[in-house]
Image (tube, rainbow, N blue to C red):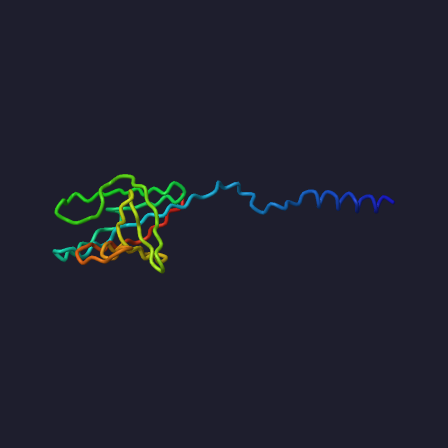
Length: 145
């Protein structure tokens, strides 16, 4: 009888010490931020072709609030670098198989998005095409905080 009681007690102690939760490190959830770094501007009437170092000009899209935050640290006013620093409201206009970026109710141009690259082409609009717009090329940076 004592052996049965000892076995039951041992089983109870060993089973009560198990945990279903394998994540016992108590790490806080990670926040992922995606920054789009402007790396090249080309086109326009003058045929510009300007490269930028990653981090000089960043665009951050906040989908829940539909806002775009631009940080433009370019100090050379003679170089085409897109929009000034600030916060803009944005939306995506989908027409047939193309998507267009609209900032503060003004259509900027078509957008093409891959995993690590974003292209905004001012020459392609939802209702017509132009020949003197700029093409903005961005690379993606992901930061986990």
